[in-house]
Image 1 (tube, helix red, strand yellow):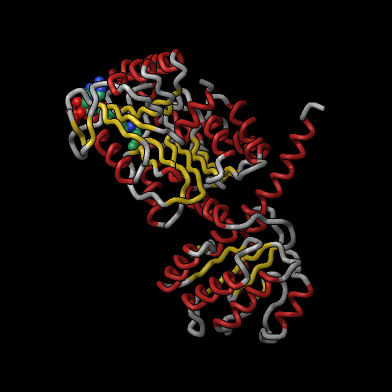
Image 2: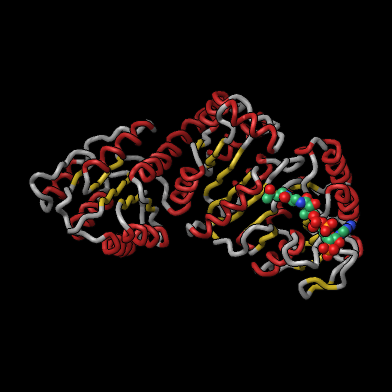
Length: 469
Ligand code: ACO
């Protein structure tokens, strides 16, 4: 069996065994089995527990070998000292991949035990995800082999996380924020399968449009960067690099035992490989959501439409900090909006329709920018006023975009204001138009879409230059 087949089995197992599937609700092994069943996995499921006959209505087996049928994936949730034997048993039974949930390895100084399980797995051509992880989710086949929340929302973002508890928390956050994911992969100590292996699979995965990584450190930097460079020419990779400060790096060392490395070196390498570095979790998910929803930026000026000068200034600052300087809007657009905007409206970029504009006028200006063939992308900023209604504006934008057959260029919205803005934002997001409360978040998001395409083209050129002729 090739190595790739093992990684494939991680995302598309035909059958799954849960070793350490407990009989007691609230224990990790029980909850993982319960999630696999409840989320609707269609393959065969085998609980393994020598003390049980039946768990959650399924026949239980004393060992993987005793199942007597093909098992692709084995989820291991028994104490660390029992894991080597479970790996041996699974390998002998022909399992392709083991998802090792158990803690108690390298992170507590037991690198020897970790090496032992990898050695045993390799002997049988099996690979290991983990140890010290909360599991894996792959929504296209309704696989939730994790002890995180059950009802993960399907979508186009793959999320790889080196942190367990933070990963579970963010899994919950995606549900509340209605962010759809193709996959959530807890990668933990990365004893065997690492980020690069996962990237190689995800780049070919038609269900994944953007890859988001919470990264503390990488062991094999060269392999990671080489793979990331190739992958980023095809799909955006967003990284949250933890341990950006000296004290943060020390915290990383005691968390997953990774070397956080030099901050500046990482930032440079990310840039060279086309990886987008987000400064925090919020930014990373903001960008990922937009990249999952929107068509690609195909060049041309970004036009900002606002009904509030201040919001426009904040967005302009955020864009400039990310290397995007607003050009004058196309003349054809200025000529068009001039016909219905007040004479004191500013027709530079941002186009400031002014606070006196009602729903129709504001939406008309945004749509004019969106439909103008010379415009490359639109950032629509809205400040709540008494003469307009954010929920009506959201509905109008959704209907207009639908009427034009969907978006053909990026549109990002910010709605700043009270409770109605929250509802409007939720509605826009639910309809594939990324929307945020703050103008800086929206500006940073549209900048990431544009900067991804720019950096991808540079990376492609660099790859061509170093390719053997
Ligand atoms: N094969 C199969 N099942 C077995 C075996 C065996 N050889 N031996 C025992 N079992 C059964 C047990 O009887 C038990 O079932 P029961 O509850 O029905 O009796 C079940 O397997 C589990 O074994 P326990 O000894 O009860 O272990 P427990 O569930 O308490 O702990 C665990 C196991 C969860 C793997 C623990 O050792 C551990 O590592 N916890 C940390 C996990 C973790 O946090 N991972 C990182 C995630 S990321 C984050 O930080 C959130």
